[in-house]
Image 1 (cartoon, helix red, strand yellow):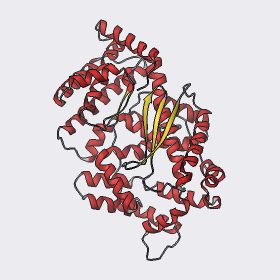
Image 2 (cartoon, one colour; image 1 turned 180 degrees about the vertical axis):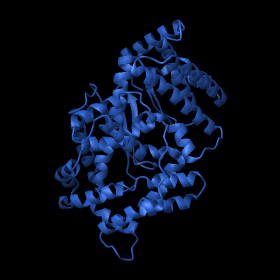
Image 3 (cartoon, one colour; image 1 turned 135 degrees about the horizontal axis):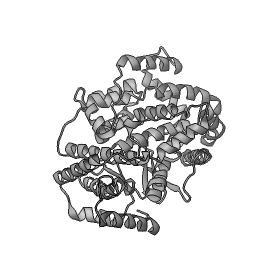
Image 4 (cartoon, one colour; image 1 turned 60 degrees about the vertical axis):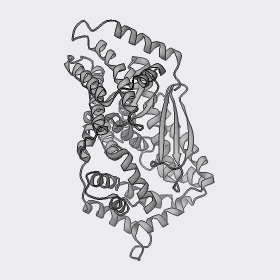
Length: 439
């Protein structure tokens, strides 16, 4: 992982001073957390040896990874050490500074999620809601078939062919073909969307100097896009081209994976917490942790931040439709339907909840996704694979987005005050806040 020498010097200095002496008293909270932080990082890396999906990013000292690999720590030892760190954090006096209070809560809750994931790796069974609370510090609401049927009825009226013999999902897919980006134009459209998303983000946020990312197109994944943060303000963004990509996905992916989404979130954490404060715990990102709800929720809400109101459809109509060779006169039609479909987002949670709780089987989960999330068969099967791999992680996209929006607006960041909206959003992206602290 690319890390600057100056950064490693800072980390070494912090660790050296922290480890040289124990805190003189319980009031020396900062010193104690500076000792807990590297131990936490190494435990996350240790869990990663047992779970290939666990460590999403690490850009700390390479010798830490080598040390962890050489130790080959078993799961029970990881749990014991994590429990000891949690007890130490909980015994600390309450810090006077708000940011330090957030830091202590963050380290404690991230470690608790780590022990929950280790227990799952050891065979412990949790219900969908128990798992999401343990790992992501949140539980998604339960929504009924009746809720989704009402939205389906709206969609049925909005899609051409209502009253015919074809199913709604088949009509929806046939209609979407008119808005699919030709394969030879995907890269050009996506790069234009990235440039626009970056420009809009940079008007409001101070992006670290030298930040950038690389785009790759891949196949055979259970996800549609992924950001691999590599440190030094750089990311690798991969876009899955297994299925046709409709025009709306250009903005979705450019914002979510890039600006002001994952890439900006991790870059701001690195700048404001790792480099400015020497908080080494942020050099690692455990995927199955409360941090993911903030990461995914802010990335999805970031689309609305960058393109408020009608600005998205106006930009797509003026720039992206022509680049893709699509009919721009139908942009508003597509946008109306997209907004209805977006309200079906929680249907995926219900499919996952029922499937992982053993109430339905794999085939029934795919049918549920087709019926209530409007996924065609192949995409429904892909989504079931995602559920099998990432389990209750699915709540982070929709519940996370709603929680982030409510939090930003509760702090005065309403749509009619864009300056305040971006200020609150930037502060969230630069802090170790937990999902339960958004509520």
